[in-house]
Amino acid sequence: MPDHSIEITDEERAKIFSEIFGTTTVKVTSPTPQEITLPEGKTVKAFYLDLSQITPEQRKKLVSYLANTFNFSEKDVDEKLEEIGVPILDENCVLKE
Image 1 (cartoon, rainbow, N blue to C red):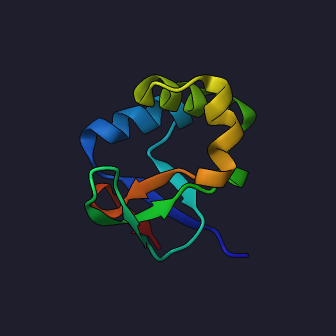
Image 2 (cartoon, one colour):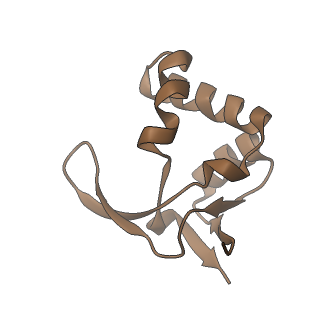
């Protein structure tokens, strides 16, 4: 299975990714973004973070960030992370070739 990476280009999100992952480049599940619907109803395109490619420490930081940002318990976020996934809006990144 080939590796697909994106680089975060949005300055604010790049800072968050650097804090969580130590880099602004992460692996994604596909080189093709998927259409998703945001909670407010807007349809956008997004890549999905390849959770199999992050370390346990990165996952812990990611879970903590998502729980704090979306006001969920870390336990709930950790349990649902694989099911829901982590979309990354294509407008905030570029696919690395």
